[in-house]
Each structure stands twice: as structure tokens, then as C-alpha cells.
Image (tube, rainbow, N blue to C red):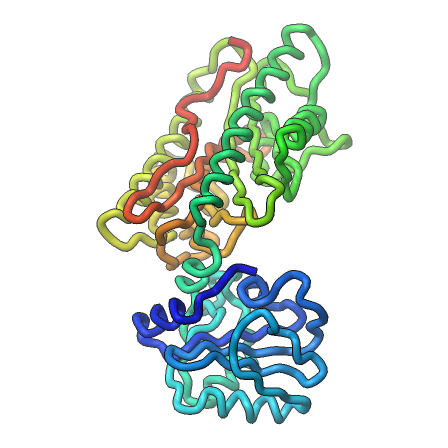
Length: 393
């Protein structure tokens, strides 16, 4: 549960010109509401609850009688219901005089991470002559902004990940030069052990992929599907992790290497397009020092650069994602492809920029950096890969 300051939220609501922020959750179907309002050990929650933060005045909890402690961790007046017509009546009273509210809602459902308000409840609220607008920027500001301590945890994790890439490439070099066997899965296991030995945890195994497997953006190596890593292969490593301490922040990077002493020009030229596209996206993010920048704008700049060079159809995912205590978090994504993400890049938030070119069945490339928005400046938090690494050099 992230600490919330009601007066700060109310000030933001007034600045937005809305009358309040409505939360509703049933058996955890709004994880945003759960993370913001309930501790993990919050007890049973098998009945729907509501929480309304008005732009002025005391917040209100609407709770089922048999679960009166559902929202014990937040302040507010408590109202109880048992029958379905009672919650409808009480919610109508709570929202009396309200004309516009924020909720976890995305117009046309284009941002799934925000589309938590169910259609039926939305229809009921609109029947009260209330306009519903998205809570998108509120969610980012109050749920995924980093404290200084959290940012430092990200930097420490990032350093370990950068070291893990060097370690992985060195293992490949050693195996090839000594004519030992090494494959995607065995390298993956070594990288996982490296993370554990350095005090990090991760939500899933790294992506270790060569050639045509690297053309699958979410390839998962296993004992059964692993390919041998050989001289002349393109090797992609995508790895993400965080420290074990509560509220630590993920880092997430992708680097590519070529198993040889020098990189063939054709391969280097394609990777160079990925790198330059990545940097085009970062240039747009940096404009936040002068104006509001939206997630879709970063993706658009990256995608346009790749498309203009003839590879647009081979860039098959969004440009980047929000990063927080989960690797894929609830802030703005860099996306004008899978969604049109109209969320702003706001101070103290973290995200990835990771374009790729995937020639299905042949070869794939990706370069991933992490970007942090300071008060009025965007920075890359770690190293930027500028060219393919010749692993045997």
C-alpha cells in the first residue's frame, strides 16, 4: 500500500476541475485501488467496496456489513450496506450534486491498465448525470512516482544488470574459445544465479535468444527449445530485476552482441537503426523540460524513424513501458501502436525505451534503456549501447 495524502489529492482534483475520485473494487478487480487503499494483509474482501475522495471535504467509505474492515487503512466516514439496492441508494446519495468524477476508466478501453471500471457500474454512475473522466495522471502521480530512496534502489539494480550483461557475454566467449557447449537455457540459468548472488529478485527468467529466437520479442528459453550459441550468432539478452527490500524499483535493459571478432556490416546497419530510433524517442522525452509530453509521442518518433528506413512492419510492439515496483507498472507507456497512450510523462516516474526490429524466422534486434523524469529533465539512468558488441574480440 502506497501512502496517500488526502489533502494533496484533493488539491490535484480541484486543479483538474473535477468533483472527486471514485474507487470501486470487487475481489481485487481494480489492482490500482487495491495498491493505493489496502495493505496486502488487509484481510477478507469478498464483497464490493467503494471509496470516494471529494475535491473538498471528508472521504467516504461504502462497505458491506459483513466486511466492515475492508478499508481500515484509509481515513473517511463509513457507510454500510447489505442489499444491492442499498449500495445503489447510498452511492447515489454520496454522489449527490457531483457533476464530474475521475475513475479507473479509459475512453474506448484503449489503455487496458486503466480500464477497471466495469461497464455496468459506469452506466449506473452516468444515469446520475455524472461525467466520468480518466484517473490516468492521478494514478501515475500517486501510485508510481519514485522517492529518492527508491530511485537509488533502481540505480543499484541497474548496475548489477549491466554487470550481468558483461558476465553473460564473457561466459559465451569463454565457452566458444575453449570449445565448450553453451546454449540459451544454460546461459539463462547462469544469469539468474548471478542476480541471486547479487541480492536481486525478478518476476521471470531473462530472455536469452540467438538469431531467429531473438526475432520473438518474448522468447522464453527452456531445456526443450534452447539453441546452442555458436560463432556467427546474434545474441540478445533482456534482463530485469530489483532488490529484495519492500518498495524497491525494477531496472530493465536489453543488449545485443555478435559472437565473433567483428560484426558484419549488414547486421550492424540494422542494429544502428534500432539505436538511432531509441535515441529519437529519448529526444522527445527530453522535451518535458519545455512542455507536456505524452507517451504516444515517444513511440511515434521511434516508429517513424524505423518505418522511414523500411523496417516499420518488423517493429511489432510498443516502444516502452512504465517501471516501478513491478517491471510493467501503471504509469505512462511509450505507445502509439498497441494503444494510444495519452498519459503525460510526469516528474519522478521511470520507463523504458526499447525499440526492436524482428525479421521473423531469421534474426531480431532490440536495445533498451531506462529513462527517469526529474523535476524538469529526462535522463537515461544507465549505459546506452551504441553498437553491437563483438563478443570474441
